[in-house]
Length: 594
Image 1 (cartoon, one colour):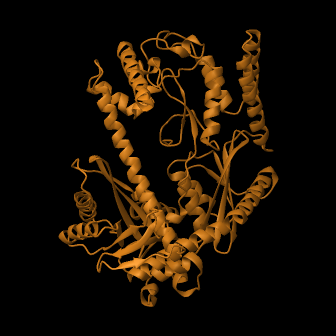
Image 2 (cartoon, one colour):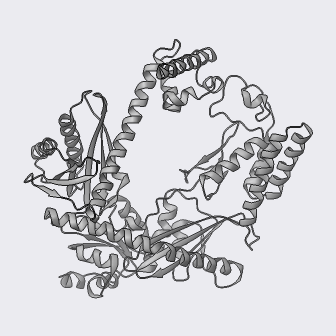
Image 3 (tube, helix red, strand yellow):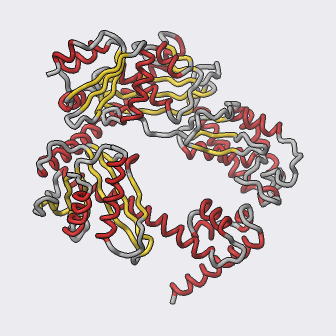
């Protein structure tokens, strides 16, 4: 089929794009020698995901580059642009918590997952194994040192100043905190002895003051930190930040394992099991570069397997990438591989079962509906409260799995309980936009099982001259999928409740319902806040917006102290708001008792 086109492919480095029968790019790859790589797709035998990819290839294109590094950069840009479904497998969407000592006049300690890797702030530490561990360290340091705690500087000192946990930077602006800053940065950089001494010092002070409850809390923190430090010990003593990547390969699946070493301590790890697409080396290199392309801070040194091109990786990542063959680093490298093997053996059976279940369900639905292909499904649901705060939501599934970056929320243009009008508006807005932006349309649309919703959806699609398969899903008395209503014939198709198809449709239904309800709660909460705030003198539009932005719900404002509220609004207004909410809360409880 591709013999003639293959003969014209040059023996040079570059990128290639695989397309399906609809012309959609389903995979982007790079190659040192394009001819050899493309030939291997169509002449060798394949299994697993590679076999499925090859079965979907209807055509291919290639772009010649001047070097392998240039091919790598082009591949990253093409993947970002087209988001091919088989490249998605290489992405690691997990984010890691970091601690930042903010670059402000009066700094704070904050925990953040989304780190701006281009921001020139040197005082970002991590990654930490969990948000819990990062927040526990921040809370401890905030107790040990009188740092600024407020997100925005108040006009007068607050409770933290009076209990000795803040120097009152809002009033005492000349205070010298340089020693505090240096000690905190030293602790975050790995000075465990300083942290332990500081905790012991605080325990002694509180013991002399007979604050035994505080002593007990600090002793618990001390034991926790000592336990963490003991687990983090490694044999390296050079205090260099480094990441170690190793892998275990079996049955066309690759388990990639990562050690995060900071200041000579093992602070965390990560694992990812993914199917191989043709080449182990290419998969590993793409995974590592993608790993650092968005959220994760690059260390001074990265250790990778011998088969990877360390020169290309060093140029792309702009940091030191090395191989190791002996010594203490090699021991850690081997331990990383051992962890990859253990993770693979523990998790692979569940992955096999989930993939088989997902694939079989998708295939079953495709065959029932007699579709040529079924990759992307989009499902819609509406939510309102007695005709108010009307919203709609859409979830997207690709090859049977949630595609969360393509979920969409719709705030509707009317306030009434009209599912048909809601369906028409949402379908029109969604697919008119996709047409305008020339983006890929779904293979299937799922709506509620009612015939009138199906007809409303069809009417809008016809007006846009679109031919997309529609089905409705009817539910039984237990709100679980019971029948599929074919949008073309309105024929009812029974669903076997022991089938993989039932599992898939239930999952889609639960996901779209959850997404719609959560968005509805969000909108309703903001609406109720506005209604409450309208009753308070001294709250104009600007102050109301600030309260809504920070707290998001009446419940959270009720839980907030007057001191904290006074950071945003004047103290007298904060007291009035706090009193109003508590009076109404008491009345609500009295009404409930009646």
